[in-house]
Length: 76
Image 1 (tube, rainbow, N blue to C red):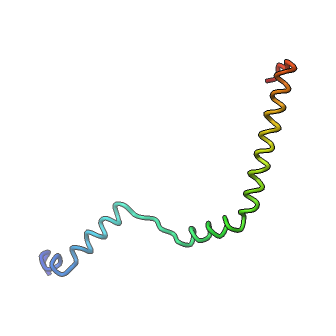
Image 2: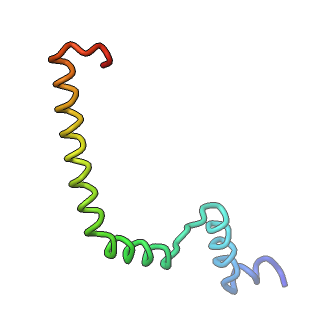
Image 3: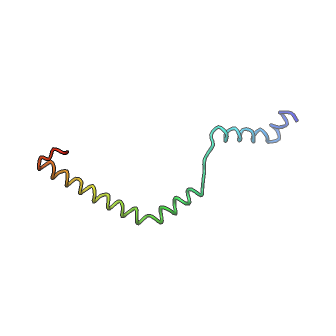
């Protein structure tokens, strides 16, 4: 079998395709994407609640810092 026969028989296309995949492999993992989507759906309410708690904590920290600045506390 000559190179011309390989290229004419579709082997050239396969060779080019294999070379492109070797150079730039595309990592597609549908199971990970599915698991991530299910995990986000299951934990949506917990994530929302955590965001609310984070906002409250930031508010308390800001209030505490303002009180310390007003009293002249040097620890800031």
